[in-house]
Length: 147
Image (cartoon, rainbow, N blue to C red; front, top):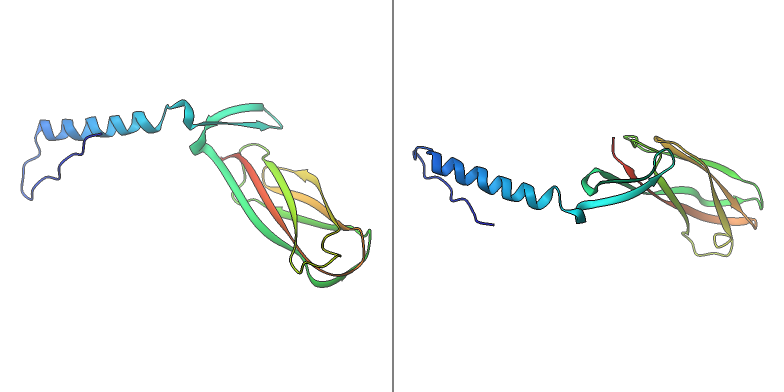
């Protein structure tokens, strides 16, 4: 793509200069907007597979503390939730991954279960299979279509 020269101070803007600006903008827009490689597919709950421009996708990545140096009881679920702000257009795809922050045996034996996902939040349950001292956080990744 050719570069448009900067005008000199006091230079009158003529038709050829404006034409060069418009041509460069249109060339750039053609490269960015309608290229098939700029599309992604999101399989939403409500709509099924949806092809959207990648610029319309929204990613949320968060690390949320579940417990920090806390004694947990085996098989006692802890209810958790995380809110997306702003909300997604449709229900996003959400992935939860427990992180054992202190690398101890209790933190290695954790189950996370998603209870409900809406356009604005994810509700999930964390259950420790063994009791004891733990420091665990949850990596939350949500991918969906921006509003």
